[in-house]
Length: 276
Image (cartoon, rainbow, N blue to C red; front, side):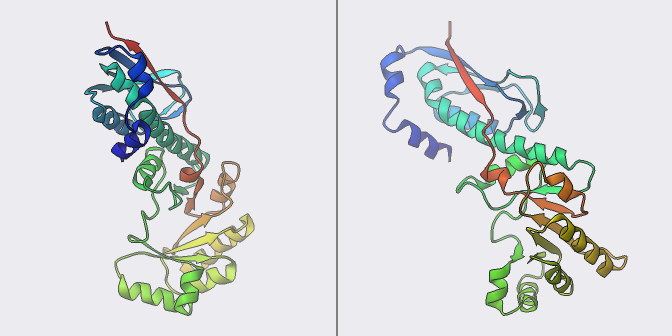
């Protein structure tokens, strides 16, 4: 992944550095965090530096912790000055994006603190970056939903239409993959009531308003009759202004596609100087 990113940026070589940096010059570089937030992605920076020929790299902070005190140095590197320039943009792109995901996730986690609801990511990730983005969600205090279509069952309206009914879809899932949890999408309380009768492990409450979410929680609890009922996952219409109210309805999980598809980049810069 890093090699591909560097090839995209460098092409046949850095013509500006080749024209302006004295041959054999060595430099010292500091990466500075300029905005409050959660740093994540330093291993991508280290790998980018390594592939550019820079081995002397020191991480200066612990990842996964919110930091308000900025600007602050997060990484130091030294080596050939041209190599530092070659690594700069790719390293900062990885670091800024993944730290942005972790920072946005931390904001959502803080917004629901004390409610018992967990914040989940989705499959709405940047193609090719899913593993990294989902790791950044965890660094921000969130939880991962399924990694892909291969590791969990989520029955949605198209699956139900093709299977012939929800009951048939759930039966097929249970029969073929007995060890996997089964999640079912519900769009209204009638579908919630029906899904409860199928024995699904998780109900995905899609684009429901607060009153309907509370109704789904009541239905689940009444149906469980003192036993542990299925987990309820709210999805759709979730942002930092609405997430607390959604959590307070009593749902267990809240999935937020914006964690990965709309996270603002956290601001970092790399400052380079000639080594003595």
